[in-house]
Amino acid sequence: MTIVAYTAARRAWLLGEPDFRRLWLVGVIVFAVRWLEMLAVAVFAYQRTGSPFIVALLTMLRMLPMALFGALIGALAERIERRSALILVILSMLLSSLTLALLAWMDALEVWHVALASFVNGITWTTDNPVRRTMIGEAVGLERMSAAMSIDVGANNASRMLGPTLGGILLATFGIGGAFAVSVACYLLALMAALRVRHRNPVRLSAAASVLERMIEGVMLVRRDRRLVGTLVITVIYNTFGWPFTSMIPVIGQDNLSLGAVGIGLLASMDGVGAFCGAVLIALFAKPPVFARLYIGGVFVYLSLLPVFALASRPLLAGSVLLATGFANAGFSIMQATLVYLSAPPEMRSRIYGVLSVCIGVGLIGFIHLGLLAGLVGASWATAASGIEGIVLMLLTRRWWRALG
Image (tube, rainbow, N blue to C red):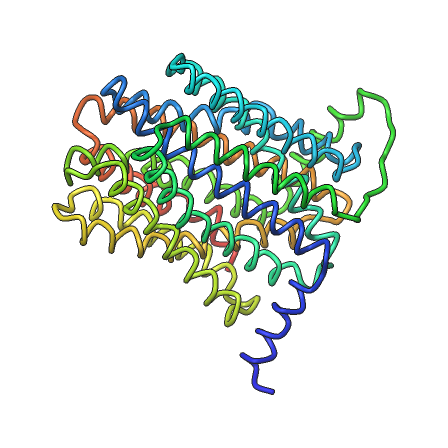
C-alpha cells in the first residue's frame, strides 16, 4: 500500500469511529450555521445602517467573549461533563436563532437584537476548543489528533462554502427570517448528533477557588513553553490583522464589485472552497516536520493577499484571491489546534485551549481597528493596510515564534 493510500485509509477509519463522526458532524453544522448567520447579519446591518464599522462591530461581538471568558471557560471545562456542556451549548444557539427568526417574522428585528445575539453566540463559540475539540482528542487518541483535526477543520472550512452561499440565497429569497429559520433546523440536527455521543469524561469536583488557580497554571505553562508562546503570538497577529477582513467582504462586494446578496454569498464562499481543498491536501500529505512551516507560512501568505483582494476591481479576481486565502487559512487553522494539543500536557489541554481562546478573542481589537479605519479611508484601503500591518508584526515578533521550526 502506498503512503498516500495508507494515510487516506487512516482518515477514513477515523470517520468510522462513532463518537468522532458525531462530534465532527456537530462541528460541521454549527460552523455552517455560524457562517450563514454572519453573512446574513452583515448584509442586514449594512443595508440598515450603511456603516462598515457596525458590520465589523457585529463580528467583533462574536469574539469579545473569547477575550473575556476564554481562560475561565477553559478552566471550567475540566470540572464538567463535556457531553452535557456540548448539549447545553447547542440548545442556547438554537434558542438564540429561534428568537431572531420570530422577531424577523414579526417585522420587529433591529440591529441591536442581532448584536446581542452575536455576543451570546460568541460565548458558545468560546467553548468549541476546550469542549468539543478536546472531546475529539480524547475519542481518537494523541497519535491520530493531527488526522482528526485535518478532517474536522477541513469539514468546517467546507461549511464556509455552503454557509455564506446559502445565507445569501436565503436572504435574497426569504429575508433574514428565513435564514434564521434554517439555522434553527440545522441546530436541531446538531442536537440529535450530540445526544448520541457516548464519550464521557471524568468530572473533577473541587473548590470554586481552584478555577482561578487552574487559569493561572495554564497561563504560567504557556509562558514557560516557547512552542506555545510562538503559536499563540501568531494566533494574536492573525486574528488581529488577518481574519477581521472577512467582515469587509460584504461591504467590498456591494460597494466595489456591485454584487447583490447572492453574489456576495458566492464571493464569501470562495475562501471556504480554498480552505477545504487545502485541508484535504494537508490531511493526505502533511507530516509532523512541516506542521510549523504550514502554520507560519499560511499566515504570511494570508496577510500578503489582503491588499490584492482589497484592490481587486473584478469579481473573478476577487474570488480567485479569496480562494488562495482559503488555502493559506487551512494551514493556519489546522496546525493551530494541532500544535496546541500536541504541546500541552494531557491534564492541562482544556486550560491551554482556554488561553488559546483568549488569544483568538484579542482579535476583537482588529475588528475595531478595521471598522474605524474603514470609516475614515474606506473598506478597501483599510483591508489593504491591515494586511501590511500584519506582515510587519510577523517580522517584528520572529524571536518569539522562530522556536516553532
